[in-house]
Image 1 (cartoon, rainbow, N blue to C red):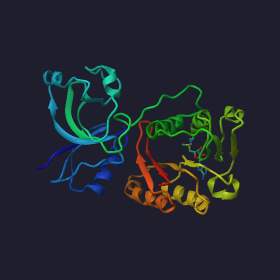
Image 2: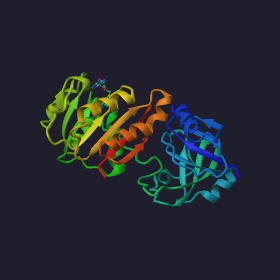
Image 3: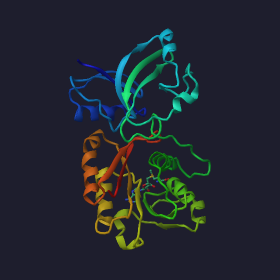
Image 4: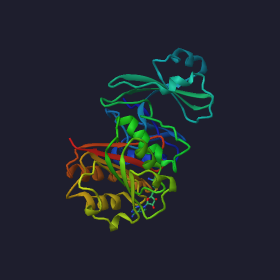
Length: 304
Ligand SMILES: C[S@@+](CC[C@H](N)C(=O)[O-])C[C@H]1O[C@@H](n2cnc3c(N)ncnc32)[C@H](O)[C@@H]1O
């Protein structure tokens, strides 16, 4: 039987999500959308997979009236509001519920002040965090919002950078570097742009004021643990340049690369970018989408 499916996405990325569906699930037919919320009519027998450009994908059960909503107001269920300024009829803590692995949940979605949908989804076998994975707070001291991307990835995958040597390409003005230094890392930032002056007060920071294209492996210490990139260039260029520097002598732990999805057709090439890092000896890969992401996703690759 044809099912209706729902997806939750960062606002502004609905077009990319549609491209992903067209590329990988051509038998899903677009049905309805509000900013950040889309439904599709799914093909027969489709397993509901996770979409890269979406936080959550599941089956629409039905729309709920306010009266029916009461029956689902329990902390067992998951709750989502499309806009932060919608006044939800449930307690705020219900929205930060930790999701456990391999479990089927009901989700109540408030798509407009008077519109509620009931959905159902099964959590994955590597599920951690809550509905969005992880959501971090931006400290006032951070030079940029890019702090959030690495903070959310670290929270979700329980990463610690203490005493690690980290190279970040595209480091200016230094939001991610600020996070990494606070976490106890030694950081080398590479960017032709200006870093925030406060970053240089930390003796564990070194800067290379050049584009990645002008770097060689010899510019970095023998032992590098992590290679990060937040360069705002097309994903194929970023992957090519990182490979060019680190192919022969890769990092000890892995890569965390922000891929800018400025064009919808990059979505269909994500698997290829992932494969290129696998081939460098990093088979444990993850493509994740975080609340702080705008037109981008994170590609993480680690040794097996
Ligand atoms: C999104 S910003 C990075 C934000 C930064 N990660 C932070 O935490 O504040 C993108 C950066 O990529 C840098 N960039 C662009 N082309 C580059 C290249 N070829 N090599 C290195 N950095 C580059 C830009 O100068 C810019 O500072």
